[in-house]
Length: 194
Image (cartoon, rainbow, N blue to C red; front, side):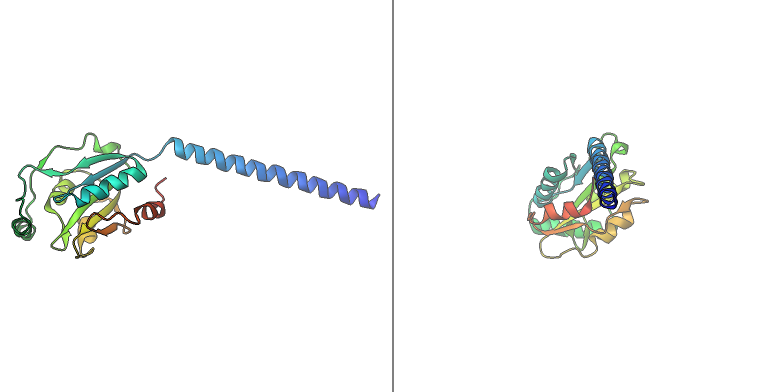
């Protein structure tokens, strides 16, 4: 009698544990499905003079989806590298904000905005500063990505954060040499966007 009662208790505990485990797995799966049904609306806005930042923007889009928006100035920069860097240096020193072509349609719809810029003289390109001045990104998650020719991050992400009024700028921005996109998948995975 005592052995069969003990067996009955063990079987009951096993059945109860199985029910609890199955229910938790079902709830977890349901929550996962709900999250996947309503992914955040993502914008990838970038300025690219040489094409490097454009390549990184496209690599990010392949990973996260979302909409691409190329930040373009009305007046183009010279084709010659040294002339462009000289003009960029003057503009940065003077706090010049170039006039942009085009606007993002309904920027309010986006929850997450990736913003890409080359490192120009240790900071973001003036065109990106214009984009930040023209768009209200208050309360949005902003994720910077920076390309460079050897200068690294310098003040790019810090300056972007200072210019992005009341937005939540990720300190885990992407910084890469040229158009190299090695490691972007892992970086995006670590951001836990979904």
